[in-house]
Amino acid sequence: MKKVIVISTSLRPGSNSHAMAEQFAKGAEAAGHQVNDILK
Image (cartoon, rainbow, N blue to C red; front, side, top):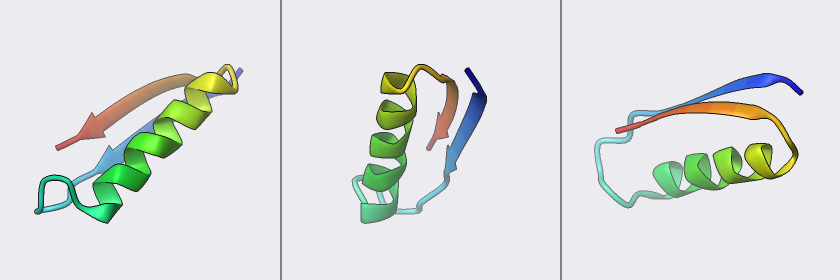
């Protein structure tokens, strides 16, 4: 298990960058990693 930090600071809510960061965090959690996300 690894610790993962996901940071997304996109200026537009619902942007592609924000959606990609959310999916990355979900995938990392599904793989058994500890995820902390900062999605603003």
